[in-house]
Image 1 (spheres, rainbow, N blue to C red):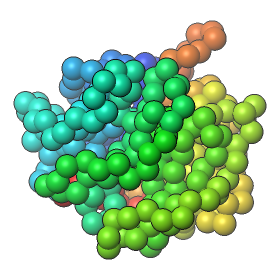
Image 2: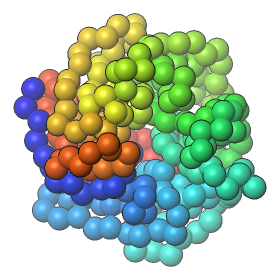
Image 3: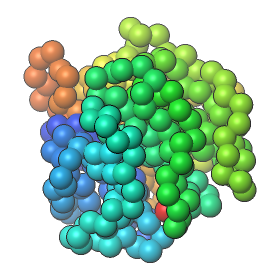
Image 4: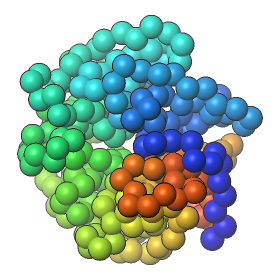
Length: 282
């Protein structure tokens, strides 16, 4: 598998890449910079924010919804003044928002994490357009990768210290989670399960932080592909490009035992399958 360096050593902790099909741009965050990054074919722009930024996703209005610290914030565009939607977890100063996704009805599903790894002190939140965040899944430690299957009847979800991907039944009309069960287990020596995405064939792509690899699981949870990467700490995959056939992977310089020349790079590859359009908030 040929792997290209789209942007060399750009991020301290790159995360949450999202393809904006209407503008043919890639949106991502550099959590510790902290910055929201918008990239097109020839350049990229960085918007510094006030606290570690876990995610940035498109809004149906044309703007951005983002998680900054423990706050959900909206921006009309990358240069606009931020507007507070809501704050969560008052008093839990070691927590912050991490990864997020929108469902086909435009709801936001955003998780928090304990930066000190205190078990069970974080959560997965659901935000209806025009509403306030509600706890959808309590007792989380490091909420991480999440995405829906092809017919949005299942949420694939990672709480990283559990060393697995879970499959959670989902009612897309009501926006409610149901039964939860293990989907795929990851041995600790293989790395920490981090970000994930689902391709157009229903396969689940997972980044292994500390494991230097991507994995693809079938919809039945069978490991089908394992791709070694030129970085130790890949963080999250996302499909992009005009035909959604390019897989982008963010990575981190964070938590390396020794310097790596490509750590923090934005990678890209063409795995032979395509992705799906991104759902916007609202």
